[in-house]
Length: 140
Image (tube, rainbow, N blue to C red):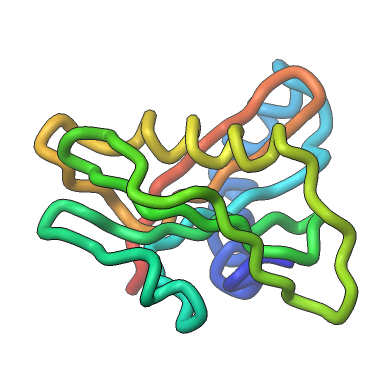
């Protein structure tokens, strides 16, 4: 489930009103999934293992078709991983996500980190069978 379904829905409504969703679906097919990447704190149970330096940040991706959050710590300036992936359940006994979704999350994140290591938060992605469309809105 998405970390902030209400915010994602507001952004999607605005994109629909602007015609961007229709144009994207005409080119890439019907939207089949959504992903939300946000900066987070390292989970409490991993704080002893994962120490963040000055340029390090923890991120989690949530999906509207998975019941887990997939996270990783990353040096955003040097684009170097600072931890392995972690999985945080959002419901009791969730299905294990496919490895491809963890890789998709980190590849999408890295594409949206600027050369100076800065990034916007959150990052929202719409996924079809053929393509994806990512937006970086600002929260009010």
